[in-house]
Image 1 (cartoon, one colour):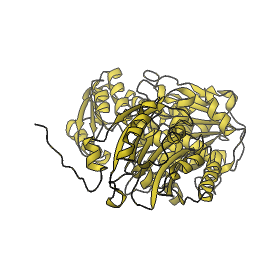
Image 2 (tube, one colour):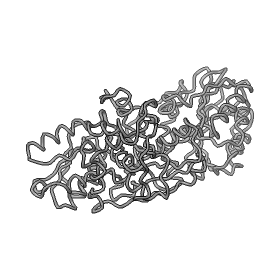
Image 3 (cartoon, rainbow, N blue to C red):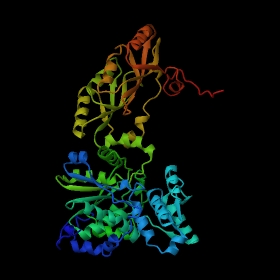
Length: 549
């Protein structure tokens, strides 16, 4: 450890708001007592010294050496067991015999439950009734008594405090306790020990502040030149606002995507430490967090939870904002308790968060060949979404997701589309479109678009998923057949799937069948599908829902 001890020197660094400065002595003063607490912390009865792994792909892309502190590899897949166990290990045997209690919807609960197992004591965990069943089972499997109460953490915490008083249990706070902070601080100790030379900056996710308070307390006591940077979601930025105001701020509401850091108010102890030891705060949006989850997966093949990837998202944002190059940057990957059903949402938002997908609304004239002409502009670009429904005899609107190589490539594509005479609206940053509209494009075929003797046929097709395959399919269609429905989504598989509605005159029905027979693609007729008739069929032939006998 002595190799990291700096010579006494003053330093100037931007404070949490980017304007204040302080010396090493003030940081050490703020962390007074915490260095000894951290050095003496009992965490390794249950925790591992997590590795500090390189992220080669991310490093190459950012032009900096990026290292990941792998707290996702802990026995409960989160750093939380460090602080919880350190607090519990310091209790008197009589206190342990009475039992402990905590309020948590996830990682802290599992840390307390594991600590109780190791220390042979009773644990009660109060969780909101909205907690996913997977997390409830994980806590109960470690022998803890689980009580479901309230719809939020605040309600669960109030009930836990009431039960602590009623049953004589010791409350284990998730972040605002000196011993919990000290337990989390062992992460900072490990980082400095594992680096051959001190890193330039350490990025830490912030919820209640226990993790960053502990890491910063140790780092600033031992090597104050290392910047400690906190990262919060833009819709759960209690620490950012508190540091800017100089006092703790309570948020009226918080975003729940990164539920592990969805805290309305930071702690008293954690805020006091952050005021003196945190260099700056960075906030990021949901798309950036999703992109960071993918970045870590590509380098480690591990899937972090949103809060676990928060530090990586902040690191990337800070590198871009300040133009950092050639530095050694550490991000604490603090958790991997991901709900499986969130993965689809993460995958959809990732490309937008990395400026690798453009979402566009395009208007084309309703005439034969116009759809093909528009698709020609897309060339061999990979598509993530393509939705079209004939709605007007003169014009049609297309919702399309296109993979791009960055914002400049996206703007070039938009310029090309507009130059070809197709009005185009960029929806890439529109939240409604990203969350809802991309799944809602459709509607019935209007009466004005129905021609006597022409029937709309609806077919599903499957084809090998490769660049240009969609264009080859469109090129094989007869130019006189009017496409009235077109929907495609890239599912990340080796087979592409599309739904196509085509208006085929009665006298050309045999030619249509010959077209199907000559295809190498699998085709399924969905023209009589009840769902199609209910939601997409012609307005002049509405159907009813018939209950099965």
